Image (cartoon, rainbow, N blue to C red; front, side, top):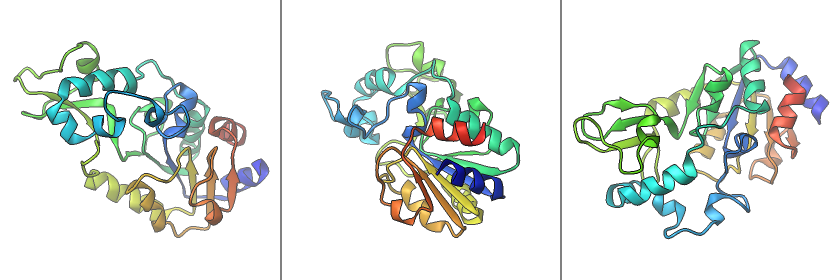
Length: 237
């Protein structure tokens, strides 16, 4: 399968990568739905509730206690998967990375065209005056972070109950529509509306890199269950 993937990568002219939490687990960032994921751990409130818009508004301090403890990994570094994708873009093969992750590791690895469907922990803004703040505005306080105007600072991430950004989704759909090869990696494809974007693909090859089965396995031309960093590291770098 590795040789088949190398052939697809060499022949593809417009490759798009669609990735999820599994891309960053090799950088030490926990995922959500695996056996050891956040959704299978026990908290005072379920993570799905804590990471919702209504909970952020009504229990802001509890939200930030969880967010700082479980959602932020400021020392994480790009792994072989991130670096390989940046290399593919540099070579003119990869046209876009579409990610459900909020860690900014694709950009840290050198990728330029990255559509962050769920936002980024690196950006934060005042809910009152809309002034933007870096991650340090959140990490350098143990309380609710506040703007100089007194407003509450909110991470620029898409919480449950919040819509995806229209411009980002439009760009992601357009990239998928134009792609001749779609690589799907590190995602269960169970999160909507993001997973629904794949229906816009009309290209020739679908490559699926994920440790567990997904609803798209039967539609893929290549399915590899090995760690994504290992696969892309060997096939690209």
